[in-house]
Amino acid sequence: MAEMTQTFLREQLVHRRGRLQSVIATRRAGNGLVELLSEVDSALERMENGTYGICEVCHETVEAERLIVDPLMRYCLDHLTREQQRALEQDLQLAAEMQRELLPRQGLKHHGWEIAYHYQPLGPVSGDYCDVITRNSDGDGLLFVLGDASGKGVAASMLMAHLHAIFRTLVATGLPVHELVRQAGRVFCETTMSPYFATLVCGRATASGEVEICNAGHCPPLLVRGPEVTSLEATGLPLGMFCDGGYSARRLTLAPGDTLFLYTDGVSECRSESHEEYGEERLARAVAEGRSLPLEALVRTTMNHLADFRGGAPVLDDLAVMAVRRGV
Ligand SMILES: [Zn+2]
Image (cartoon, helix red, strand yellow):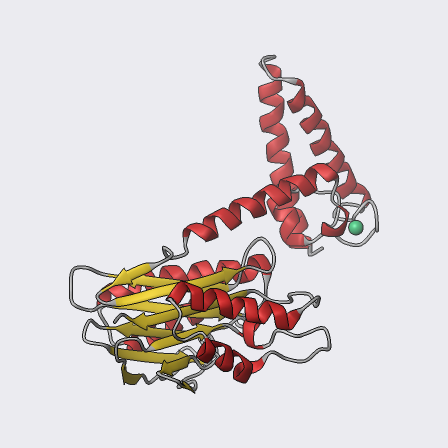
């Protein structure tokens, strides 16, 4: 461990020992504090004899960032005690609940538009970003976003929450979609560590059926017009790659009954038992077959189609799809 980190942690521990001793001296403290004091003493002793920050099971170094959060940590992530594992699981459950709260309402209808989605984290939390923002104050209609933060698990879910906050804040500016994505990209880039990025599709749908759509390096959304399904290629790079990437938006007019179908790569790159990839074409066929169904049923049958294809093969990524339909 870096010497600076160890010096910092020693100061922290000495400070905490002082606080503990003064509380224990009041004699109103429970036994727990006395035990805690002996743990602090033991950590300081380990610092003296050079065994501090080493896992007691495998003798590998304990992750420095975990020691900074809890300087009494004696096990690496792989060798937590059952109690510590339970605490970690509870944290994850709480994070999952918070993430669910960030999702849009199901069955949303606004200004003649209908939205249905399916959101399926691989673990407790997901790196997929799914949002619908409606503002009643103007005739803007609604803004929909489906994206995918790089990586998986907790780190990706934090990026997802970050994107959620960025878009929720920027949407109030009323900027055109491509400008909104550019600004979001700049904030994301300035506030996110460099190897991370996110792809997304952002669209704004108005009451008259116009859709302005911008695709930042994401899987091409499918446009369903009658029996015809076409895909809308990316018009820009993922967010976070360059702080000032330019974006353009495509304008479409959707007739009543037309549907836009957005998905993350967890869907298109899903593999079957024989390692075959699901792929965009298969997805487009499934969506075309289900196009006359009510929107929620379309989402459900598409996900069932994917599950049938996957068979017994494991799910390896977060999954999300969103269908946006102009009502008839
Ligand atoms: Zn270990």
